[in-house]
Length: 330
Image 1 (cartoon, rainbow, N blue to C red):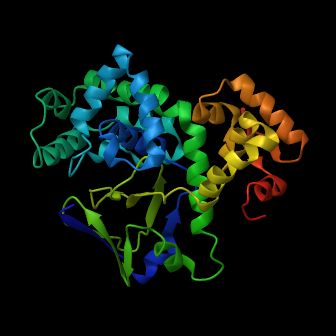
Image 2 (cartoon, rainbow, N blue to C red):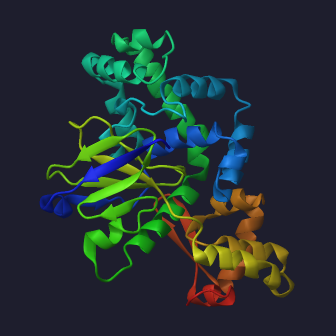
């Protein structure tokens, strides 16, 4: 990182700081793509299992083509990639984001692709996109949807659960308000009234009373990323912190529990570091979903796991008894 991002706050901005409680699907799609194109040794340990699973999914030719198209627009090492790829409407979900992406104006396409060309040589096909080729823009949107559906969505329960745990950690302080939250945002450093972090280039974001939307990201693992256009609503995506303490504790205690519960049930119990669906646990452990479901029933009957419906899914979490058994806090 050769530069610094400086986010300048005024007194009015503190009233308009929003810490997102959930992951943003559009940002996670592109940052997941960046993880996929980053060497394993440069990734934190928590992202390596996902990358391994994603590489196997890339055997699909259409998915590989979609990833190549999007890498041309937003490579992992880019100092800038176009803001139109991550519209603010993604706060309302992937469908809303893709609708906005498909109607991006020609003027904006041209302006932001010219900006990208200042930092790197752009592929020839992007000239058609910059001229407002709607069919090509639809191809970009379709590629994002395919990337999300095939690579990100299968593990979305884990993404959301981990981001939720991060949110709980950052908002747990009873006093200190917004500044206390800002002070938790590593790799940011807070020096009133400026929030700074390493960045590919030197950049200043003046909030000017608009506040900022702070978005935690599962796949962001190095520097934060900010919307570049000063005329757009300020958005800053930041990496979640490392594995929660209870996850590390659970991993250590799971082996000791194997003799008591059986290896399979001990692994399932140890995997419930945050709320997960059955499928997410099965994916994390490499176990059949039917086997995981059977283990969860036994653990639930023993009062170690609680299950409840959340929309279309049933989610599972440790009870106080289960957390105590793993050696964590009750």
